[in-house]
Image 1 (cartoon, helix red, strand yellow):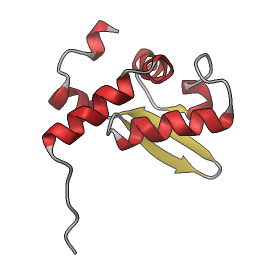
Image 2 (cartoon, rainbow, N blue to C red; image 1 turned 120 degrees about the horizontal axis):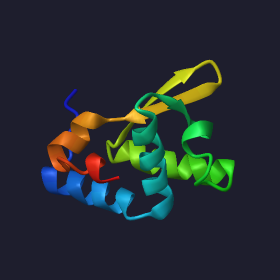
Image 3 (cartoon, one colour; image 1 turned 90 degrees about the horizontal axis):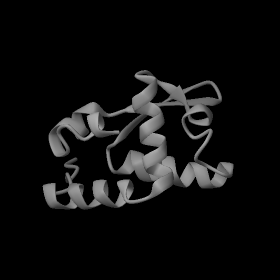
Image 4 (cartoon, rainbow, N blue to C red; image 1 turned 45 degrees about the horizontal axis):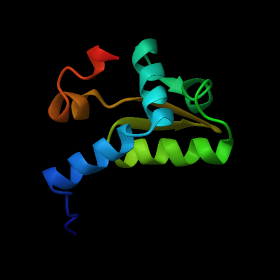
Length: 96
């Protein structure tokens, strides 16, 4: 089975759309400031108003390749996907 990878242009569009929202940018800032993996609750603590809203924002960031998600029991942990930032937005995280 051959899974088609998004083109570079499509990937860039997803990344910029994801970062164009203040809530998602706040999540990225929290993850960058922590320098380590956080639970979704911690990462979105001061930016996200509801659980369903949080789910939407984390999904958008994951689909853009900006975060990695790991599930442990009932808790989801998120971390920055630094490879994506280094490839498409070198130096961006240092500006946060």
